[in-house]
Length: 412
Ligand SMILES: *[C@@H]1O[C@H](CO)[C@@H](O)[C@H](O)[C@H]1NC(C)=O
Ligand SMILES: *[C@@H]1O[C@H](CO)[C@@H](O)[C@H](O)[C@H]1NC(C)=O
Ligand SMILES: *[C@@H]1O[C@H](CO)[C@@H](O)[C@H](O)[C@H]1NC(C)=O
Ligand SMILES: *[C@@H]1O[C@H](CO)[C@@H](O)[C@H](O)[C@H]1NC(C)=O
Ligand SMILES: *[C@@H]1O[C@H](CO)[C@@H](O)[C@H](O)[C@H]1NC(C)=O
Ligand SMILES: *[C@@H]1O[C@H](CO)[C@@H](O)[C@H](O)[C@H]1NC(C)=O
Ligand SMILES: *[C@@H]1O[C@H](CO)[C@@H](O)[C@H](O)[C@H]1NC(C)=O
Ligand SMILES: *[C@@H]1O[C@H](CO)[C@@H](O)[C@H](O)[C@H]1NC(C)=O
Ligand SMILES: *[C@@H]1O[C@H](CO)[C@@H](O)[C@H](O)[C@H]1NC(C)=O
Ligand SMILES: *[C@@H]1O[C@H](CO)[C@@H](O)[C@H](O)[C@H]1NC(C)=O
Ligand SMILES: *[C@@H]1O[C@H](CO)[C@@H](O)[C@H](O)[C@H]1NC(C)=O
Ligand SMILES: *[C@@H]1O[C@H](CO)[C@@H](O)[C@H](O)[C@H]1NC(C)=O
Image 1 (cartoon, rainbow, N blue to C red):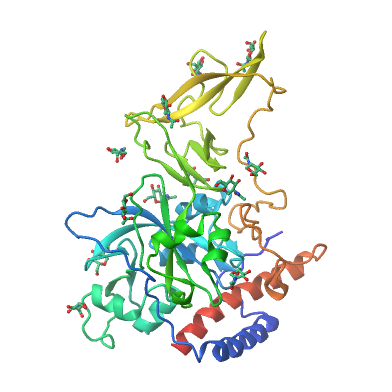
Image 2 (cartoon, protein in one colour; image 1 turned 90 degrees about the vertical axis):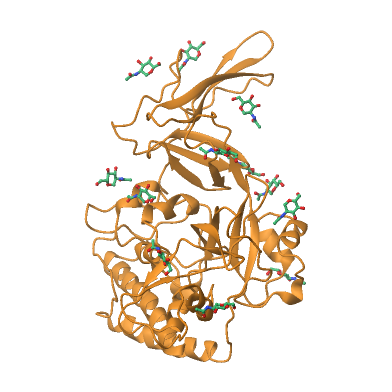
């Protein structure tokens, strides 16, 4: 699988070209009548002097299959930073040309910093350098209109939006919010046509009240497509040692973060953080065995006693500036005395994912937290199709993505 690298616009295939024009026509027709806004439903006020930046997430609703490094670039990140929040196999971090499927259900999560500009909370960590042929509205469209071109012009100090030059640096101020209870993370969610509070609350397993509070005084009728709604994401909050550098680690539910210089992977499931050695932790990683035990980080060992079981576990407690991994051996009584748990598995890549030899990108992996359903023409290839058809489908998907960008440029 994935033996040929299909980066860029796979226009070599006549099918891809045909698809391109079909998508072009349909998209132009669909997009013509709507003018998009890209404002926050309820912007959060702040004070540039006293409000500190906070971590936040931006929702990226990928319309078609996309190249992770293109999106990472667009949001001033490296690809590694996008893996954890989206629960993508961390060992794929070094592969360029990693293609991911279009969003289905939930958008991809892009980790950013929420700062304060002009009295409002906006993302202050995304910069864009203008290239030949850009227009401000085309640039806003590349960010899926999460922000208006007028706002980009304003915060970048451009008084005439028609007067921009290649090489000029822009700030992309996507609306965001900071939640004031620690251990929560706000998501800037772009509203789709037909969205309502109940549906969005269900999508993220939060209460409608939580959603409404964060966006007060909004109601269903305020939900305009392409505006930004804030969603309080469920997260796991670390309880590490006070002297740990990663003391305040926050991991989104169903996702993971790498820490301790990439040696430790902390997974968040059902509100519980579980840290284990990262699957590709190299020999440069410090000792990850709990003191006075043979247990490795994250491992458990239960011993039958008179009243039940004593379950010992090796719990990660953070890492220090001297690159030492802190851990503690914790014991709890368990009356039900479970069968000895199997040693915690390290991160296992999805079974259908085969890593290709160095240099060639892997096939589109499945995103474990959010499996893409079969959506017809843009879905993954049917089982049993040979290598040749696989790569032409990949070419087509890649062409679709570039088409989409082209369409946006033409329409705006
Ligand atoms: C990606 O960026 C983060 C934060 O800037 C940095 O810590 C990390 O080393 C980078 N990873 C790679 C592979 O460049
Ligand atoms: C990525 O590459 C760097 C240097 O080439 C290496 O140190 C690191 O371990 C690699 N990371 C992964 C996840 O393979
Ligand atoms: C940005 O907007 C503010 C208030 O709306 C205005 O005072 C300021 O002049 C604008 N800046 C630019 C560069 O247009
Ligand atoms: C990003 O753009 C803003 C506004 O143009 C500028 O002030 C800031 O220095 C830029 N940041 C980086 C990292 O280039
Ligand atoms: C912060 O929390 C306080 C008390 O819980 C609440 O009254 C206030 O509205 C919150 N502020 C924001 C911006 O969420
Ligand atoms: C709200 O959205 C959900 C999911 O999109 C949908 O199933 C439901 O019918 C909508 N409810 C109303 C009242 O529109
Ligand atoms: C939703 O949240 C509740 C706790 O509020 C939790 O018990 C439940 O497992 C969650 N559901 C899913 C599907 O994650
Ligand atoms: C955090 O850890 C300390 C000991 O390291 C423990 O006493 C405390 O109960 C923990 N808090 C939570 C909320 O788990
Ligand atoms: C973690 O948060 C606490 C409280 O906000 C703060 O005092 C502390 O400095 C933070 N620790 C780190 C390592 O950032
Ligand atoms: C999380 O909770 C769900 C149901 O609430 C359960 O099916 C699932 O196994 C739990 N996951 C873990 C890792 O405990
Ligand atoms: C790691 O630490 C444990 C406990 O302190 C010790 O028993 C073990 O020998 C160490 N392993 C290595 C490779 O240093
Ligand atoms: C698990 O506990 C038993 C009984 O205390 C002990 O003999 C064994 O060495 C332990 N295993 C590990 C990996 O610590």
